[in-house]
Length: 440
Image (cartoon, rainbow, N blue to C red; front, side, top):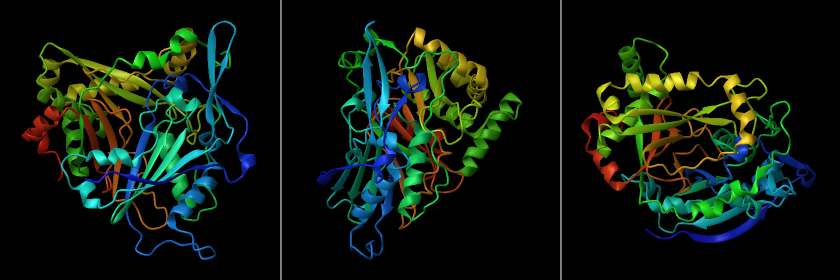
């Protein structure tokens, strides 16, 4: 398959330069993400049947998208800024977002000879998809000298891929899709935003702002140098609405409850499949790392808050327990862990973080990680020529055991973008119990 050819790189700033000014202090949810890679999600579209041209200027689709990004940044000025630091005399450092309108990266590229079918038909996600994103390989702390947002528009023979890369320090998955939803609204001609963003971070009463972190805790570059991840592949598995409903009913029936959610049942099913096909020692402990959102749990956070509002919970079981007890018990353990994340527990975690800063590291081979959510509006993003036909992630934060939950193209269906070793993915494909739940 051909390489991706870069046609142009440019810097896009806010259309209204007065919209971008000031600074945004970062709270522990943001700071935890400093060593994480940027978040990358993209949408695959068919090409417009008729070329989009603005009547007065005759400008192309690329110009239209670049202009609409500039107007979108008026509402998201922190994405046009940079991370910044203040060094303190007590050998500590604090981080904030400088809304200086340094600009976002806008890249126009082409994958010559590559078709939509080349992307969505293969069993495994083609590696070229990773080249449909910009700012590859960057981590959160590198937002000091690099854009916080990168947009890449890649022309295919019969399609267009819009790849969005956002620094995880300033935005979680909810916020990434909030931005994309807003951009598509503006691109299609909307003037009134359906969900204006709120950027003000929440800090517990009495917390010193800005948060000072010991310099010794933020030597991320040195701590990441020695880790070389093993080779992995991506595959997207499709679960129909009916299959998800059956898994939920089965999990609840096994426990004798009605509290287990569709996602908890599905993740339990996936967890058991992965451990079965990794041939894990029955006595070995295995873990599943979930993220729990704070927007619905903290009264101080509005639904349209733009930033990070997540905390991890980890469920741990021995492999033999996972295999012997059906999907109900692991799903119930997830349910109980999530239920325990109350408003009070969220606040306690935030209050205690500055005294002992910890950061999110994603490289534990014995743990499965879930990111994203099928509840995000993905297939509703219409930039003016129709809705997307597929959703794909980039190379960032990809390692053996990373699972991205995506909304399916059909209402109520769920797609799983699974990143595993080639051996695990091959074994899963030969696992009849698992593949019977997959929709081709």
